[in-house]
Image 1: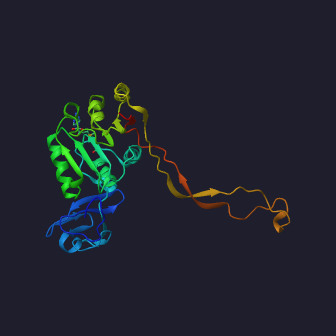
Image 2: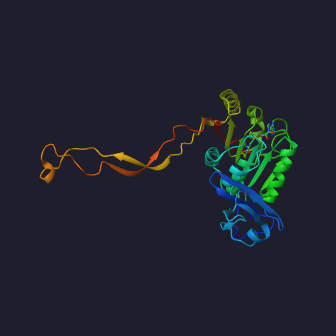
Image 3: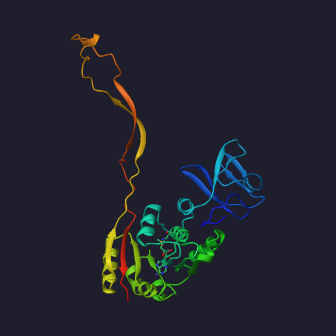
Length: 297
Ligand code: SAM
């Protein structure tokens, strides 16, 4: 199992997502002899997981069943252990596209945080790209390295435990794209620019507050960045359901037996149809995404 390549069969050491329902999933590490408790009963790793196909339905000891799913960056984002605030798929999808990431891209990121964005970047740039991710919190950097190893993507990523505002990304002139998710991104723009390739490249900074965005945009302008644009991505998930619609009564049909005045229409008065309903409430603001292009040197 790897987060960048699909495997058919579950093996010892793999990460598996146990799917109990859309709102209820958990990641587990498969270990022979180990057991996992769920509300449907116990899952025995040796007999219920190892050797089974990813995607199988597994019956637990109390008779209920779960699906055992192959991990993906999307599933990891909604199941990972939170060590920090994280980025979610709505923002990640936009970042990946607007940074023009593709297989082979060299990308810089700071901070690594809980590694939510890092996993999506890694899948996009595999098999030949590289992610240089910088995190100044020692335990978070250590944990991220350990997870990348367990997820079989460590050959695609270098984790540096340093302050990106003081020490930069540890590379010069080779990055195709830089992503910043730190409290003072404006202090890292000089390092971002020197990490980027001479032929340009794209930068994105995520900030929850507009004051941070203003300072970052000023720093980007001062350093000659172009095409600076800030946007906010809001997700609206429509709910598909059956609704009962009343039918209008236009009176009796002309020429029919019912056409005498005063005879009531005895046909159907409503019809059931499926429709998509927009949400009354929407998940609110996560942050602003500021994008910019580095001009060619
Ligand atoms: N984008 C990450 C994700 O999706 O999981 C979350 C990043 S989290 C909000 C911000 C991280 O930046 C924290 O782990 C923090 O320790 C790190 N950080 C803040 N300032 C930093 C700096 N100057 N240099 C390196 N890391 C920094």
